[in-house]
Length: 456
Ligand code: AMP
Ligand code: ZN
Image 1 (tube, rainbow, N blue to C red):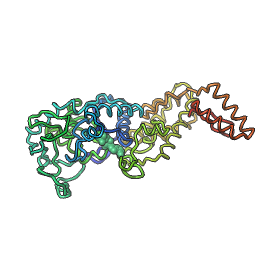
Image 2 (cartoon, rainbow, N blue to C red; image 1 turned 90 degrees about the vertical axis):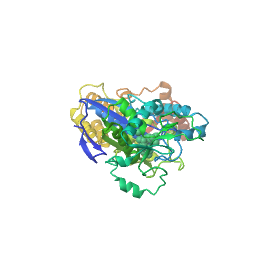
Image 3 (cartoon, rainbow, N blue to C red; image 1 turned 180 degrees about the horizontal axis):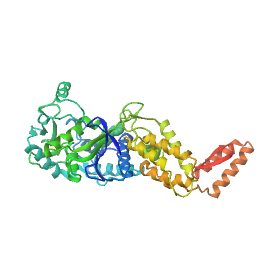
Image 4 (tube, rainbow, N blue to C red; image 1 turned 45 degrees about the horizontal axis):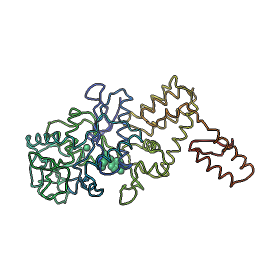
């Protein structure tokens, strides 16, 4: 039995899918106006681990992840500029070119982190008709009103608006001393926004209400309904989506279809840096590419993220990333010596699955991996069990398992020469040789038993 924490009910629940053996899952994807940072990647790693855990339990998972290429404003509550237009001005390209460029960069990051591809990556701009149709249903059912700048969802018409975040409508109203313009309540949100007469948008469409573009939330309701039936099983995203984006998705699907969009709502906590927010202006925002430029293996970041629980904040430091990388390298080196997979270690497989099935306790699952490494059993059995575990860990351990490091003869000669230099206490020569060895992609560690050669 898998137990998952459902934000909607504020408790861990026994997971039971709508259709036996199958899981429909929707993960809020990236807004493609800039490179995804490693905090964003935490969110996608979380969804990946969830999906892989479901698959390890034998479920067939259909995962849909949207690509937001229109409508996400710089303020989450219908204010500010469209993020795509900001990027368009910044880079002097069309919004479509921006979207394509950053979508590719995102796909590359997914591959680097060994995140499994979703079954579908629908783009908001490819689903304008579906969004308009859904807004029409919402309007027909009496949940929408029009102002001079757009069509809005009337949250006062929905009895349990706010159920996901647990905020009451009144609280939000009285708490919000914000300018709400023509909106009837602070919680009401845009379904469709008009372009206005003076605008520099290159993304706008005709609609029954006027030329404009969809509000940010409607894409997820419309596309999840199109590609997964509603209600579907699991919806994921970061905690910042709870109060506005997901609350509004729920409202829209309820308004249009009269059903709850998804049964289980799961949210990852933030990756922080120096215990604070990552932001471009603070200069502490990193991308996967930047980690690589600093000499880190992207999978070390994956290992680092697995070390924390998805519902706890995880503080990123380069020291922590380095120890994750050291642990991963140690594991890779150990398993090079293991025999070909045969047999299994059922007890530790059970312990591994039990950890994951308890609301994705990945750090406990990693502890089980190290127990396996230390276990006093045949390495062939360890091999098979480890490969099975790697179906969720996604650390590409198969590329190391049972593959002893082949040291080229020229590298071995350099290492021998360096040993002689050390015996002669010729430290300068020894340092020069170390650099030459590194240039060949290897490193030497001096141990009591002599030099150990490793991949750089
Ligand atoms: P966005 O591209 O802004 O729509 O964000 C993509 C995903 O990343 C969303 O699910 C966010 O909730 C999530 N997210 C944003 N910042 C962080 C962070 N620092 N740590 C973890 N997840 C984040
Ligand atoms: Zn979404």
